[in-house]
Every structure is written in C-alpha cells, then in structure tokens.
Amino acid sequence: MNPTRIIPPDDFVWSGRTDGGTPEHLRWHQKVRPESGDQGSATEGPAVELIGFSCDEGVRRNKGRVGASEGPDALRGALAPLAMHTNFGIHDAGTVVVPDRNLEDGQDTLGHQVARLLDTGNPVVVLGGGHDTAWGSYLGRTRSNRLRDKRVGVLNLDAHFDLRQADEPSSGTPFLQMARADQEAGRTFDYTVLGISEPNNTGVLFRTADELGVEFLTDEQCQPRHLDAVLEVVDRLMKRVDAIHLSIDLDVLPAAVAPGVSAPAGYGVPLETIQAVCHRVARSGKLVLVDVVELLPRMDVDGRTARAAARLITTLAHDALSTTPPPASAGTSPHAGGAAATSSPGAATTASTARPAPTPPTGPAGNTTGEHR
Image (cartoon, rainbow, N blue to C red; front, side, top):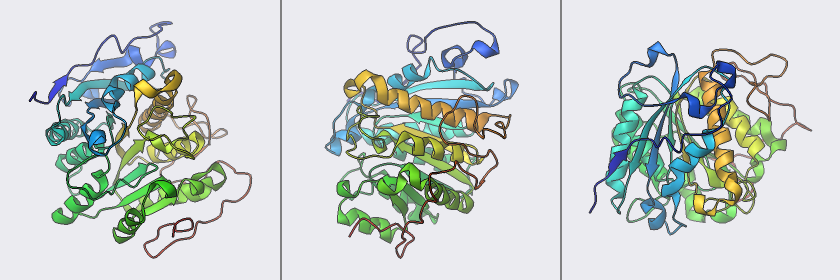
C-alpha cells in the first residue's frame, strides 16, 4: 500500500494572463507562493493558507461518482486568473494525496497540516476532495493551539446532512463523526446546514438531525426571496460561537451551475444566496476555516462548477482579509457582485428583496420542518 504523501503545488496550474506587475494588475497566480511552514507572514500582512486533499475513497465508500481527487488542482486552475482587489498573500501548502484506500491515514495527515496552518493566524481554505475532507479539517481545528478553548460552529452549505450512520467513515459521515467526537471531548456540537434537499435525505437523517439539535433550512427555504430569513439563521450561529468552520459542498448549487459534482442537485440553492451567505460569514471576523468539496472535474461542463467555486473562494478571501470597508453606498467589495451586505460583524442589514421574507416554521430543536414529514 502506498503511503499518504504531500506534494508541492504545481507551477503550471498556477498560471494565467499577466497584464502587469503593479497592484492594480495582479491576479491570483501572480500572488501565490509556496507555504513556508513558519508563522512569519507578518512581513507581508494577512494571507490565505491553501491546502488540497486529493482522495476518492470517501466518495467510493459512500457509493458516489468518484473523481473528486482531481478537485484541488481544478480549483487552483479556476482561481489562478481571478483579479486581486485587496493586498493579501496567498500561500499554497500543496496537496495531501491518498493514493490507495487508507482514507483515515489521509484525514489524519490533513488534520496535522490544517492545525499547523491555522496556527499561523491566517484563514485556511481546504481544496477537496469529497466531503470526507471535512473530517480532516475538523481534526485540524481540534488540534490547533489557536482554537483551543474556543467554541467553533460549523456552517455547512449542502444538499445533504452527511450524518449517515455507517460501518466505516465516508463522505456521508463527517458531521456525525464530529458530533460523537465533540460529545466524547465534552465540547458543544453546533451544526447548521443550509440547502437540505428533502427528497435526498431519508427520515432517519432528519431524525438524527433533530436529536443532535441541528438547525437547518431546506433548498426551497434558501431561495433569494427568503434571503433575510437565511441570513438570520447565519447570524444566530455566529452569535453563539467564537469561530466558524464553513464547509461548502458544491452539490448545494443547482445542477445547471454545478454539473461537476458527485450528486448533481435537481433543485439546488441559487449562487446568489450562497454568495450572500459567504459575504456575511467572511465579514464577521469569525471565519477561520473553509472546505470546498465534491468537485468532479471530469464531469464539469465548461468548467462551470470550478468557476463558481473559485468565485466563492475569492469572495471569502477578499472579505475576510480586506482592511478597507466596502463603499457605504454599494455595501459590497469591488470584486463581488450579488447581494449587498454591511461589513460590520454580525450586521443585520442585507440586500433588499422583492418582499419581506417569511420566517420559516421551526420544530422542537429549532429546525425548519415545513417540508418534511
């Protein structure tokens, strides 16, 4: 069996058009540098720390379409040509590669790397990989000195709960693994999901979510006309916790936007809503860790899934690392379109909608229960 290894970033992937070398010309590929392994990024100011997780085993165990192992470099390639509108560093720590079926060893290695990168003080973005990537991210944040004694909330943008009970870990189990690990360690498991597809989650998954006190909204309840209600859920989570672990499963998006995933959505949450949520979380000052998962490049028509993911990543990085507030009149940074939002942490002002968004019905655990049962 070949061991898990870490390979350095590929310069060929980080390439693209160059219009000049001054700040107003810069793109991601011109700013990226290999991660140095130290905490000395203070000389260049804030930075985003990237690391890839190349593994198909979790998706294979979950009986999904494999190919997510190709995701990290596809995400890098989509980020490479994007423009920089804020002066922050980009550090690439390479990719954790799991060549065989030893998923657990790969997740442990990823956890070690994530912990090390979190302790630089910069936000960390993990480029997956299947959603089993999230368990490796969890191992990292629980090992991080920076997050010791901090209450970390998980916000999952996903069509699925991924609370599956199974004989072995997979891409369908990471959040149940987190719940059990937090219980054993005496930590609070604080988990919110936006985008749940009722037809694609069985009754036992809804029951498990209720038992664990998971707050969630369905894909129907995350449409743009309900944006105020969606952001209220996000704000409640942010008020309860010290830091946010954001997990973005690209299958939350409609299949027309994200065809290149293991399980394309028959309905999905529009990119407009997902972008607004990313703005809100990144501007809170509490975002420490992001995973972007389930990209399947071999099925990605015109690279549209990778492009949508790259748009979300650059939004998160710019908003989290920007030292300049967005213009008051627009409420959004120059690189980002879509819904406007204020830049102050936990702010309640959002883009206007066609009509006031209704407050979704809530169940005993604070969950929305309007569509299921």
